[in-house]
Amino acid sequence: QVHPVESGGGLVQPGGSLRLSCAASGKIFSFYLMDLGWYRQAPGKQRELVAAITSGGSTNYADSVKGRFSISRDNAENTMYLQMNSLKPEDTAVYYCNTRIGSLQFWGQGTQVTVSS
Image (cartoon, rainbow, N blue to C red; front, side):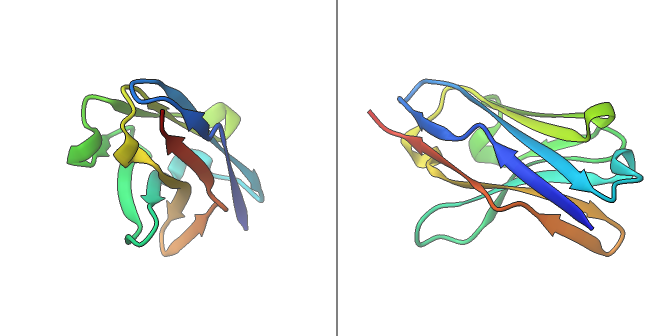
């Protein structure tokens, strides 16, 4: 069982930056083999993929965040990051960490990001 825990959310003004972290704990024997992703869910909307990084390091981003967000991972620390720059009010949402290996996937509890002046 893997327990992803997000941190780093908060209130930020438009144009500001935040860095989210996702630390995986539990029986982790192969974090480096996992595909990882950040999702978000705004009020009244479906959860959507924001950014993903494979075990091999390949990344992909939602069109709405390309050029502003950057996903990375530190396998030695069992941690994933999401650097968010030039934040917009429409980025306001609960951000969730997802870890996946084979048919198994695990979700964190989420961290709130609010972009407002």
